[in-house]
Amino acid sequence: MNGEDKVALVTGAARGIGLAAARKFLAEGWRCALLDIDGETLAAAMRAIAQPECTLALICDVAAPDQTAAAVATLTRRFGRLDALVNNAGVAVFKPALETTFEEWTRVLAVNLGGPFLMTQLCAPLLAATGGAVVNITSISGQRASTLRVAYGASKAALSHLTKQFAAELGELGVRVNAVAPGPVDTAMAKQVHTPAIRADYHDAIPLNRYGREEEIAEAIFFLASERASYITGETLACDGGFAAAGIGLPTLRGQGRS
Ligand SMILES: NC(=O)c1ccc[n+]([C@@H]2O[C@H](COP(=O)([O-])OP(=O)(O)OC[C@H]3O[C@@H](n4cnc5c(N)ncnc54)[C@H](O)[C@@H]3O)[C@@H](O)[C@H]2O)c1
Image (tube, rainbow, N blue to C red):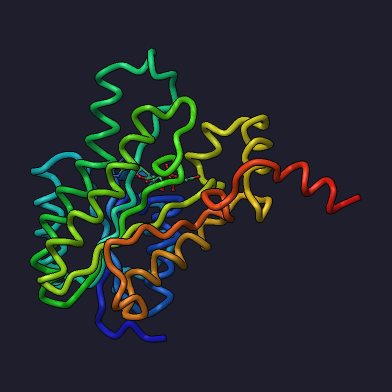
């Protein structure tokens, strides 16, 4: 497939799901701006991609209004258009609710919710000009509560609703706004916080019985950003191996199925 002259902007693109999404857009023939707060990792990603003619690196904190405005201005000068914004940059503080500091709460909300708010406001005029789309990356932690996720889960649940809020208003401009809610994916973020015991718990709760791959999340992101999803807006698509769909009894039933 050929994206012709289409342009995507992916935040948190230096590694993990964001980098996989950027690679997917490039593979489909789009040009892509990769935005990240971590300049060193972003530079390594740019070297690995090695397509300078159709990529742009933007070092930026999505929670800083002046930096986001400068980044979108740089993108506009370089590419002159935008067809998809992927709000993927996110941070996780996994701590008991009563031990989470207000500073931690504020930072998680600022990056995971404030970032998409700022980026969507800034990019809306560019997206309106192309009939483009926004894809926000939420989480299963925003759909069902779990331990240690008071700030992270609240930020992702709010991002799912922000998706609907923007969809309600930007539809009139021809801009679709959707979200992908990944289940556990084996990225650096997951490696940092998922102990072997937590991994076993996840496997027990997922009908497909495995973690997701970054490339599988990238497929869902690309679908929602593309013309193929032209009548879908305000939706959060679970990409989670069935986690959100399933209830109790999976491990027991699996055991019976095996016997
Ligand atoms: N990995 C999972 O299991 C999982 C599950 C559900 C949802 N998610 C969500 O998917 C998204 C990507 O997760 P990942 O696992 O690839 O994470 P990751 O930590 O591997 O990558 C996140 C990237 O975002 C960047 N980033 C962090 N704060 C930023 C900021 N303020 N401004 C700009 N960039 C910033 C980081 O530098 C990093 O490159 C996140 O929003 C995360 O919450 C991940």
